[in-house]
Image (tube, rainbow over all chains, first blue to last red; front, side):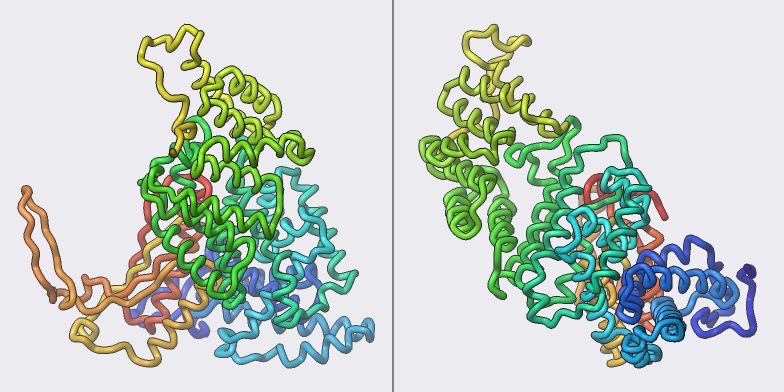
Length: 459
Length: 126
C-alpha cells in the first residue's frame, strides 16, 4: 500500500485548498467509514444480488478497494457515495459473471442493470432507503428463528462483527458465525431475498421488525447475565435502528411507538444504575433522568398517537406517565391504571396483568390490587416468575402482614436465577427483616424505617 | 456517546445574511443522512449574536451584555447534536457537517459527559 504523500493525480475531495497535505488514511479511518456506510452498502448490493452473503462480500470488497486507493488519493469528500458506486459496480459485474455460469440469473441481471450507474446526486433519494428497508424486512423475516433474526440484524444493519454479536448473544464466536451463515443461506435458498414488500405489506410485517429491535433493546436493558463480558451497547444499537426506522417509515405509528418506548425507558438508564444492582423506579433520583431522551420519547409518542398507535405506543404512553412525574408523589397512578386497563383489554398477558395490579394498588389501595394479582397465582405462565410473589410481598407488607411477606420474598428469591433480580428481592427481604416486629430491631439502634417507598400507600 | 458538533459563524451570517439555497440543500442532505443512520438527535442553525446575550459572573457579580459580539469566527453559528459509537465516528460526521458548509467553515466536536453504562457503553476516544 502506498503512503499518504501528495499525489498529483489525486481525485476530487482531498481538497487541499489551503495547501496542506491530505489527511493520512489509515485502517482506523476506513473502519470508521465501515461503521457508518456498511448497512447502506450491503442493502444496495443485496438489492442487486439477492443474496445476503454475496452482498456482504461485495461491501467488504468495496472497503478493500478504499484501503488500497484512499491512501494515495485521499479520502473522497463523499466517501459514502464513493463506496456506494464501487459496491454497485462490483455487484453488477458479479451478476454478469453469474449469468455466464447460469442463465437463471438473467432476470436479476436485467433488473440490476439500471442500478449500476445511478448518478451520485441521486444517492440521497429514496432508492437507498428502499434498499435498507427491504434488507430490514429480510433480516427480520419470521421464518428465521429469533436468535438468527437478532444476529443477522446486528450484523447487516448494525454492522457489528461476528465477535461482537457472539458477545451480545453470550455464545462462542463459532456459534454466532454459524448462526449468521445459516440465516443467510436460509434467506437465499428460500427465496426470501427476492421479496419486495409493498408499503401495505411492510406495515403488515412491521411487527416482526419491531420485535427484533425490541429484543435487542431489552437484551441491553437487562444486561444481567454474562457479567465480566464486554458486551456491545445493545440498547444503543436498538435505538439507532429505531431512529433509522422512523425515518424510513415516517407514517408507521408503531415504529414511532417503539422508538418512544425505548427513548423513555433509556431515559432512566443512568438513574437505574446503582452501585450494588439496579435501582427500582420508585427509588430513583429523578434528577438523573435524561431530559433529552424524555423529550424525544414524548415527541415520538405524540407522532405515534397521531398515526393511530398500537401496543408499543400504548406501553410508551404508560412509560410517559412516569417520565412526566417530576417526583414519585406526582405520579398519576389513576391514569396509569386506566392505561393498563385498556392495554390489557386489547393485549391480554400475565406480566402486564401483574403490572396492572400494581398500578391499581398505587391508585386505589391494596384490596383493588389483590383482586387483580391473587388470581395470577394459579396462572401456570407465572409459576416461575419471581416478581409475582415479590409484588404480593409488597402488598402484604403494606397491610402489615410481615410474616406472609417474608415467606413470599423467600419464595421469590428461590425462583430467581438472575443476579440483578436476586439483588432487588434480597434487598427487600433484608429491609423487611430489619424492621419486622418480634425481631431484635436494627443492629445500629436507629429507629426502624419503612420497609421501602414502594410499600407506602397512596391513599 | 453524545457529541456536540459546532460550526463557527462568519461576518456574512453575523450581519444577518441568509444561508443560500445551495447551503440549505446540502445541510438538508446532511441532516437526512445522519437521521437515517440513526445518529442525529438535533441540528439547527443559530441566529446572529445580535439576537443573543452574554452573561458573566465574576466574584458573585453578574453582568449581562446584549449582542452582537465581535469576532464572528469565535461565535457558534450552527450545531448538530449526535449520538455516535465513538469519537472517530463523530469526527466523520463532523467532517461531513463541514463539507455541507462547502468547506468554508470551522467545526469543533466536543463529547458530552455521560457515565459508562447501557446506552453509553464506551468512553475511550476512538
